[in-house]
Image 1 (cartoon, rainbow, N blue to C red):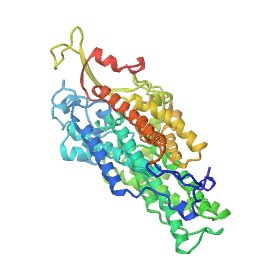
Image 2: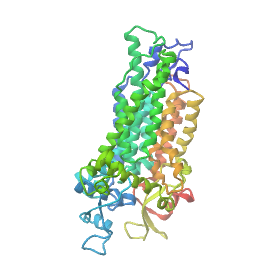
Image 3: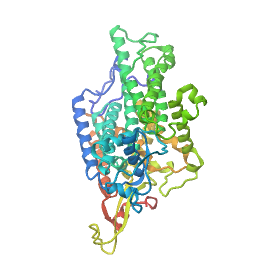
Image 4: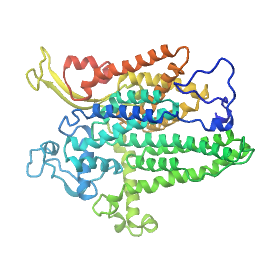
Length: 549
């Protein structure tokens, strides 16, 4: 459904004054095009920064515990450390050189961080996420705080960007604040902000890119409104209108999508869907402006510049992520071009880029090859169960701690310490219900605001179903929760209603109770997110379903 076919009144933000009893005056075309975020910009930024600061502190406390590498930290922080020294991923042995019985990860936990060699290691993800981990290692060293620091920053910024996205879509600082608080209190977002994995960086870049697409929508519509006002026009009168070839927010989105792909390739799906959404919005805006049938030429006249801003721009940004590999000679497959000078990739693109393209073939073959398709993992989770949190992932565990050891005071029981990649259950279940409500608001209610996070969420989620014959994990859903939290916050905004609405107080109590329930649930599961000491009985009290164990 295009915006030109929607009712003349723009969606009312939470906090807006209630409409008078008499029928309101229909909005003019310029007024509809000029709709945008509320004028409380300073207050909104104070709210945003306050919630973001809280999220930072919450994630920062005891982030260095445990001291050793957990789960897939056995890959990325070690690769990042060698990239600092070599420019590419070097190889780590199984045991510390000179200490044949000391495993390399144990050696690193003890401060022995020189066990790597310049021999190239075959890696299957682009390098940007590891370069970002390397930033923390550069400033704080090869230790648990150093390799988790960048994740802490990215996870905190993810809260900030989600607040701004929710505020822009809802036209409400209150709704943006609700989204930020909910994401702050999500167990999965919290945990992924405290370990040295790649996915938190991908989530940050993707949500930032989607936020820029939303900002570009407003920028474009406001420029059309200015064009009409400047020329004293009620509408375009069947003309196409200004070309507006340079779009700064769209350019920023292209850069951010390139960075997201530089962390993980599946970001391509979100780039494709957002490109389509953005161009459809252009057609809709020109129809609203009075372009008539000429609005459809926007598919080419705005679509081609959109392709350049989003896709063409993303390509050199992605290639820039490989600068270390391209400017050195020891990386995996770096010499392939020199060894195959007659290959068509080398003839057309030169030895360095030809080698890089061939390396990409090797990485793709790894992800889709028989080795991955026949692999199994105790914590693999089918995407069908992600939205209900059917199978969280265990990240680290120390089991059977005896009474009197490590502070364990259990009676007729033992203790344990775990880190679980688990969302806050009540939040995920409410977000799933809000997803269905958001679909209804978008499709039946013709409310465009719900369409963007739903499409973005689907683009990060649905492609995984193609790969269900290989091990998939719940923590991949970190790219889903910022969008479903945004949808939930907007649904709660609908419940709260306008500032002078007759049911606002009741709606505020309902929304407040929902947020309070999420906060209580997060506090309850906090020990299993943070390596907290629990008796086995206390841990089982947090394992609500057999599939969580």
